[in-house]
Length: 123
Image 1 (cartoon, helix red, strand yellow):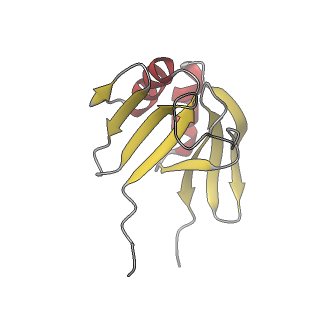
Image 2 (image 1 turned 90 degrees about the vertical axis):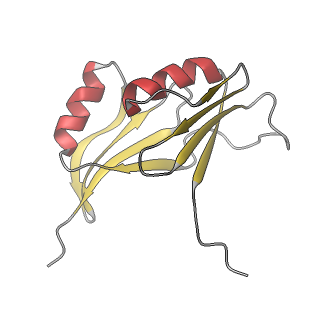
């Protein structure tokens, strides 16, 4: 049986409330659920982003932040970079053109990679 519908991304964070404030600022939405060990966002496109305390998650979290990315498509990559930079978001990569399109990478307070990209126009 296939399971094709990805609908939820979960990040393990050290301080869910602080991470929730960070993501609320960059996503422009408030969490739909918030507690000391878990914060949940429901995004306009139907995806959900959960922030779970790495200290209380089961089974024990062994992966380190930065070993994967969450990615957001954005028409104006450079404007998104400027907005996040003005918010004081730490950057791992400045806007650049890569083989798939224009992109940059920001970091959340735990060091999770947030890639913003615009794919090349298909001919």
